[in-house]
Length: 409
Image (tube, rainbow, N blue to C red; front, side):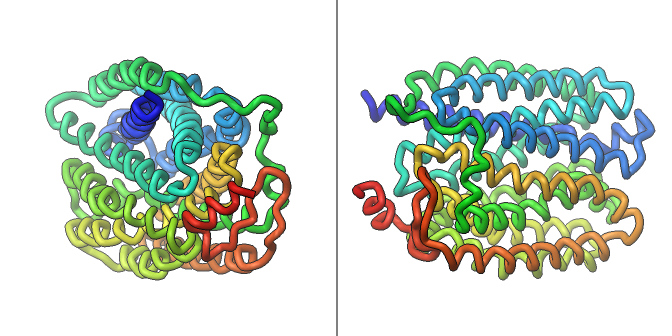
């Protein structure tokens, strides 16, 4: 019975992530149509994207630890409802500030759902946290790809308001389904109540290193989210190709993420991250000189493979740096730090693109990823003493055997 309940909960976590992530991204392929209808500037698109990141940041910093205090199920249900409300508001938005506010609700929903799902999965099998987080990342990116693709297809037959309304209905139904599947959530052990905020984890060098890896992964996300549709449109792509590019980017990631997680469990998150980033950076720089939308789309497909390894390596590094009882707090902290970077980059991306085009935006993004990644390594290689509630696991050897040894102490 316990195994069945655990599988039901995992199904709820993965399925809910697909819908919540997909709903939060529906707005992006609709940007060109919304620009024409509402008269939005390119810089305003960056603000819409930044609003989602900023809201998710606030939620990750303040509410993620509640996932370790027995409130994961409630967090997941509220998250789906927030995304539904975001989409419903977007359907009737008539001004730029309304889109910004609606996007903020959607970002808050994603920020609430992610640590709840991650904490549940890590506590199910701490020694396989990399694989579980890889699958969760697959579900998230699957939603990030399917949502825009379906929105772009629907836009060919209907108006943006109808697309938003349909996506809102799906998110509302998902809230009910997730609430049922996540029943029987684990509660904290008697006498153990994790802190309400996660900042105490920053006392540990390896946690700081994991935070920097999360920042490095999210810098390109901030650069791409708002500008990618505009970038492809400027290269001559129509809305269908823009939506298709999101789907094609997701497919290799969805294939590679779980094996990447198993690799991270075996060799350690930092090593997996480094292997992925070494190939990722040249692909980011390549977008600066591409002149054909199909070439850019194909490059995105190739980039997705190594992006999976880098991203899963980053989240696995945090999972291997903290005790499973603080899993939600650790993942929320890492995602919040990444969102700080993504918010700043997204807010500036429109202006940077308008100033220097793809050359300035993508080359600058590649350089930033390299610099942040290099800054993380001294922290990951030093410091073996962890504060209470944090596991001191050697950076490059945090596999299943080490995890079991730590738990047996």
